[in-house]
Image (tube, rainbow, N blue to C red; front, top):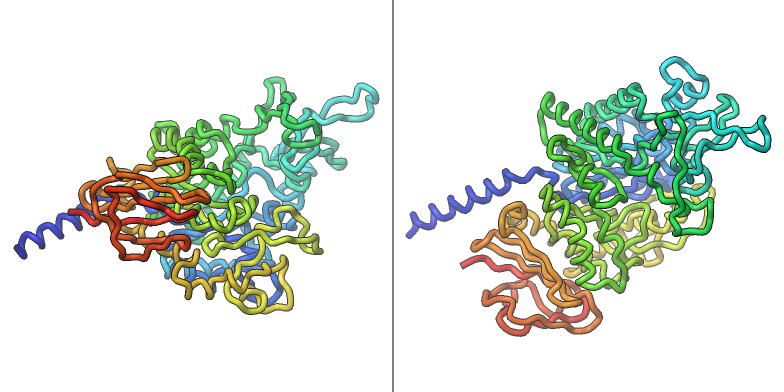
Length: 567
């Protein structure tokens, strides 16, 4: 009997190793976005920095994070808080120094937490040396950006009009006249963010140099900002076509006024992603180590995202980011969740066996505001029990909410409410800064919703999140690329079921009541389960037994994870 048990155990271990070997680290990773200005201030100036992040890396290890990606920390005038880069290979003094960056990388590697940087290739700052050289038409930089003479004003031949009717994401024309160069330059975002010209091989070469620079300093990948905007349509005669009306807005200066068929998701963008992927793959082949990855930020159709991932011949971004669940609101049902998931899975999983689920980011309101605080745990459970990688915005793991903000000398942005400082402890400034003030206000409820307090509450949002990360290391959760490894469906309008399994060996069943009334499901199966994780709205306890052969009730907003450990 003992020999039988040893052989059985050995086979299970070998099976587990085989499962794990087929899944690269990023495919089922727990990714975590840090907004550096708001994570941890180390020097008392009220603004987060690299040394602050380094001091909190143990926390990321504690909560089970595989990799964290940082919003930009590069030199910048901060017109768009770092997304207007003046030097792509230097750290802005606000955040520290290159030595601070290297120390952060070293600590992260020691802990086994990977670091991913924001890569902003579409544009630079207008204060970037490249742009200033391009204005002066210096050799090699003449066409580094998108320049055009514009159209002659039919009412005044001495004046020029923009080359096309294109409207920027932030409103107003995408074209701004530069008096020194006597041409218009293109900017899909602010006029202080001129677009680089990726039709120019020298631009592509410079950007590969940027990637290599940070890879050599030890980063594990890049999140590519604003992917759909990198290329625009240009006619064969050098002109730019006007975009048609969308019918979504009556304001001609609004981005929604046009249908962006010429300024978004152009096919050369797909080819550029393939070029960058090839570069990263060759870097890994030359230098060894784990896969360096590309995350692509693209609010695009799933068909376009599929191309960004690859076309069967060429590979692109490892993770074109899936924002579908961010469109859920407080009235969304289990059926809505299934429909949102299907939109991704019917194409991306069917064609590529890849999935990722994004909770939030620095451009969208927090889950507590979009869906209600009572549903934060539900969404965290969904995102972390669906197959593939999860992406969590800092603070969502403790249930942070938007914070009302007013314009300050530092910031006046309608996205400030979701960018406020991380809430670490029930002390002044929530433990974020020892200085007299913070760049954005601290939430009024920080004494309740903070890391230190939630560590001591068994069913806090933080401890539920940590429990979910532990589940990701089980054989059942690692088996998502194998037959029978997962399923999900709305059992009723309000009850969602997610199953993760190694068939006939181990199974976890997740049941979530999205509604505000008691719900029940019937006759799910004859197996006996035990509760592995329960939400705050559940009357059950971890370790209790559950029988699914009859009627199974769920309280309003209750979520449970049930474990079956095989025969």
